Image (cartoon, rainbow, N blue to C red; front, top):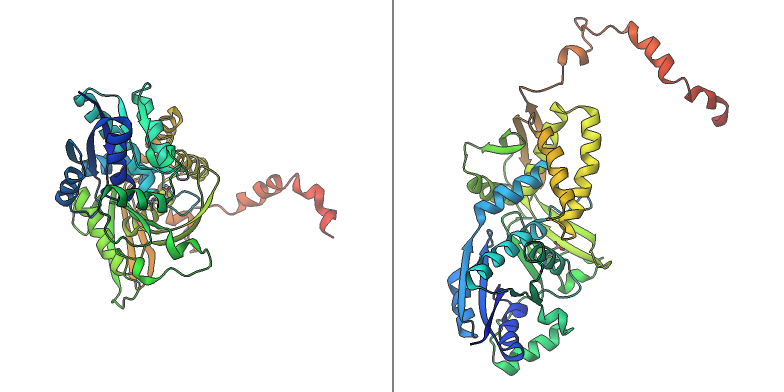
Length: 391
Ligand code: ARG
């Protein structure tokens, strides 16, 4: 009996040719697995395809709730935007998929894994690092990367094997609840405006009346949006509503782990709204010093997730700091959606350290202005020695 391999399968070109490559060149029984983290796919069709091209077993795993609880919520608390722009949808999904592959491998009694990643992208790191963190002696076969296959060679190989490849778009697309990543084709020209037909979630040609959204947060995570309290519904609702208002497009020149710069387009309405609202509420309840250190750690956190090091101990340590700060991030944020724009228009919290009485210019303020004179004398003590320089 052949040994088994667990392949992360999407039904696309890379993973489809991998099925027969693993069978023919490695003499393995192929177990295909797809993890549902909110991508809009027909999972029955993908299962059929897997069997039709030679999988010996196929698994579909619903991990949407786990994705929200253990990944998306951490990203919100960390205001996670790689290079201040990309909400990390694809990057957050990969470690979870890898963990699910390990669960299947344990049931099937194998330590051999496969994925369709190329050697140029970030996903190979996310899969391999996570897999090896739980199974250090895992064997990982990535046919496209390991054989240095070009896309044209892949298509030829698929034809030789009679593996059907649907007329696919020129773009490479990855999708989950937290966003849709689009790259390739005409988008590779960094000066070219993205054609409108690449968008699926965001309506760029809308003309809607203004609308308000209120988001309640508890310990840094959303607990109610427009009266919805189920987390999966909250995120799909925001993707839908904010998407209709044209919110959430990111056009990004991005630095990949392997040093390559790439041009990526993202659609991430819910992520854009939630991070904007969350950041705003933090400004109401956290101190200046907390905000300063937190923003440095947020950048580091985002880089760790982006570069495949989700499992690194540093991420856990940063999470501890961030979770401590989030104990006070409770309250409500009001946002206004207008055609193609999003603005926070109000925020309130029981933990607010904004004090209207202090900041007010009206006569009733308790703030004793006369103290400021002496404070500023001392504050500027060293700076005044440079007085002559600018003259
Ligand atoms: N550049 C993003 C990342 O590394 C998205 C990659 C998405 N993959 C795709 N096939 N479009 O996380």
